[in-house]
Length: 469
Ligand SMILES: *[C@@H]1O[C@H](CO)[C@@H](O)[C@H](O)[C@H]1NC(C)=O
Ligand SMILES: *[C@@H]1O[C@H](CO)[C@@H](O)[C@H](O)[C@H]1NC(C)=O
Ligand SMILES: *[C@@H]1O[C@H](CO)[C@@H](O)[C@H](O)[C@H]1NC(C)=O
Ligand SMILES: *[C@@H]1O[C@H](CO)[C@@H](O)[C@H](O)[C@H]1NC(C)=O
Ligand SMILES: *[C@@H]1O[C@H](CO)[C@@H](O)[C@H](O)[C@H]1NC(C)=O
Image 1 (cartoon, rainbow, N blue to C red):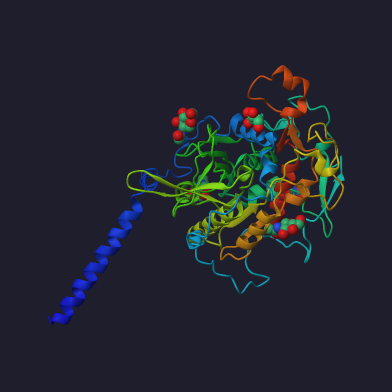
Image 2: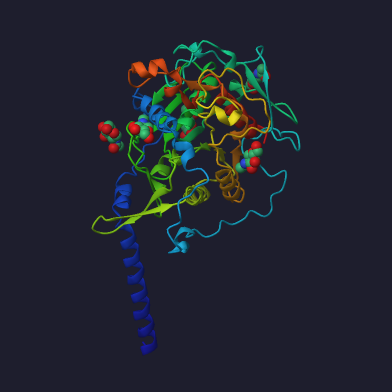
């Protein structure tokens, strides 16, 4: 052996050890160690006995906490007034993710999984108007669907008017395909439909369950290993409709599916901070993501960038848009690495608007969604809580991905629906105080939506984009 070869061998050895050391160090973050332990995966339909009625991870608290916080005006405080950025230090770190590759050859008649037809060329199904249509709406009666969470049951909690159920979305350029549950169940035989996100994803999930419910004998409820995952299974079609609680998609200190009241939300943004959640998303065939409402804290976002060996945490404040971009990029990367675009469809539901300020639509100074019985008909209406800057991030990040992601652009059409919120007609978590009783608008929930109602339209659009892209 020449001394040159020996040197080369030694050098390789040094490099190898260095790599090992780096890998080891990156694993030393406590969160990541925990992650490895928790990754055990139980197949969806391994054994009958796995299906037992378990408590829903989706509890009253999810919907109540957030509407309370938002009712207190935290949504608007931060709008347009970002705190002074913490200097220029390590700007690079925030842009750590390399640019996503652009899919260049986007042929028109590319194969799209599950598609059976096309929407008319040039028709934007998200641009349109609300038409009052008592003949064809709603898709189901509130009483008919036994699964609706009490957070979304408005009639049962005393809502006196039902007009909000009769509005049908009419795109300007074409007509929507009517939601056909039998068709959907047949086309998705053996598949997993998964909603991921916060309580608004939860509402969309329950809406989907109700839309399908009439056409199957009975859903069986269950869950896998993670308490964050609720599963409704339709055995005759071997279809599951699932909901995974992850309000920021990546890990955060708000991930406990039953108890996520925290003083200060912290979003985990170290490498790998999506993996733990995403382990439960593997094998899903149709995925629908959403994240927005939890970002509206009125301040910059606190992000956890890592922890040192002795447990010290590196928390960094970031502008909402910047952190949002990083989270979406992490989601996209995970999807690109773990899903097959020829077998999977991915959707992203855009911002769900709130209606806490009737002044936005020319109402009185103190008002909100409480007592609203009609939609807004001004086509240009846009509420102050929906940040166009966030929409911009959604367009930018999701507009150039290797794995196509369809945006369900429901923001504008939902902006019009000040009448569709649960308002005071939902299960309350605490008994009302006398003061609240005297002033109902003080506890109106102008975040969530009644079922049946607006979110059935989100799903009708989802259905159209899935089968008629
Ligand atoms: C709302 O804000 C007020 C003062 O800003 C505070 O005293 C109160 O505790 C807040 N309520 C909730 C439910 O956060
Ligand atoms: C719904 O789909 C099923 C299965 O494809 C079909 O037989 C039925 O005619 C459809 N119903 C309507 C109203 O189009
Ligand atoms: C149900 O679907 C899964 C795939 O999601 C498949 O592995 C399984 O064999 C199917 N079971 C039946 C009874 O068709
Ligand atoms: C979530 O919170 C509940 C109630 O505080 C607690 O019992 C449960 O252990 C927590 N779950 C996890 C996974 O930490
Ligand atoms: C959603 O639609 C609005 C107009 O209603 C548009 O401004 C926005 O760019 C769209 N967003 C995406 C991500 O397509």
